[in-house]
Amino acid sequence: MPILPAACRPETAMLERNPRARPTASPVARAVLDEAGLERARATIRSWPGYAATPLHRLDGLAREAGLGTLLFKDESGRFGLGSFKALGGGFAVARAVAAHGRAITVTCATDGNHGRAVAWGAARAGCGCVIFVHEGVSAGRRRAIEALGAEVRVVPGTYDDAVRHSAEVAAAEGWILVSDTSWEGYETVPRDVMLGYAVVAEEAIDELGAERPSHVFLQGGVGGFAAAVASVLERRFGPERPRIVVVEPERAACLLASCRAGRPVSFDGTLDTVMAGLACGEPSFLAWRILDEVGDAFLAIPDHAAVATMRLLAESVAGDPPLAIGESGVAGLAGALAVAAVPAFRSTLGLGRESRLLVFGTEGATDPDVYRALVGRAPEEVLAR
Ligand SMILES: Cc1ncc(COP(=O)(O)O)c(C=O)c1O
Image 1 (cartoon, rainbow, N blue to C red):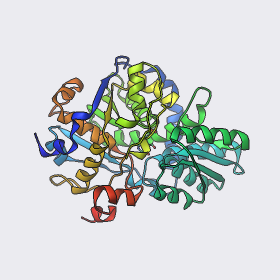
Image 2: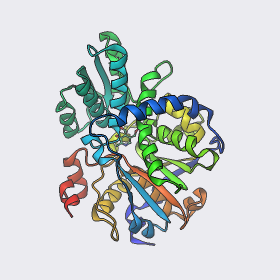
Image 3: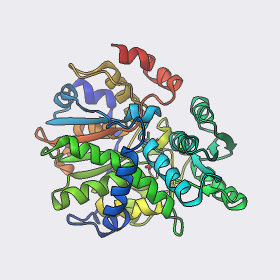
């Protein structure tokens, strides 16, 4: 067994195939993220000062070690200086809210860190008020990053899902605009804008790949908005030729895998205690689930140590690959891909082989440098300076 998969100890990962995934077009994906909406998000975001497509790295050393053909890694760590792809979703949804209601509004949301930072950034750019709700588990570094953008941060007891409910209640009582990254029946317009913003990440990757087509895409899931947005774009651009889509979650917050098993959106029972802070969500987004139920081919749950081992592998740089400083949630898609690659039964379930061309997304950089250093043993700047 090569050193690399052994480091991730993948044997504890859980893989569930989705019997409802459609090999042909997904009507729900196409209706929710329609072409006009995608075009609006694309044009708006590309017009923002500082916009640049993020890099797509080829990790040939890692691909060889894992027995794969190609490993393409879209690195979101430099996105608008905020450290994650979330800037696109929160930023776009706030811009749309301000366009609809004017600048005298206050926007609000719950967050595990990155979405709140994106909404605060959008509010600072638009000049509107902003109050962000964090649960007790959100690290001090992530809270400070939101405050540094001028937002008020309020701490609420419980989990991310409790903070979502609280933010919705306060927004209704105060007349604030709720810019949530998760959706429920009757609250869909704003989360759809958030997903339209995320879709830009997938479009950039496809543009850069040109004629090259990935065979498999591994997408990390919190409430599922990111995975649903990327999967929708892949389905729209490639149709029945689309790559196999695998959604990866922490084993202690696997609400999408649980929903796949149940055949309907269900809550994940548990403390949601995972190092992958951005994915610590117990309830799927209603809109995202409807899309993933049609285009998510499989759902995978991975242990925390797989994410940490993958952060270290990227920091070490395997066999000539560039060293990368990617955060706990940011590595989850790649950690899932490496876990599958290391288990023969999973490889055969997903048709993964030495010719496979994998696309994964490093959805965040070291968004809390203290947490990163504690897990990797080196500061992100040290890793990048190598
Ligand atoms: C870095 C990172 N990656 C992925 C996700 C997952 O996004 P979603 O909750 O839309 O599934 C998040 C969510 O906060 C995140 O912060």
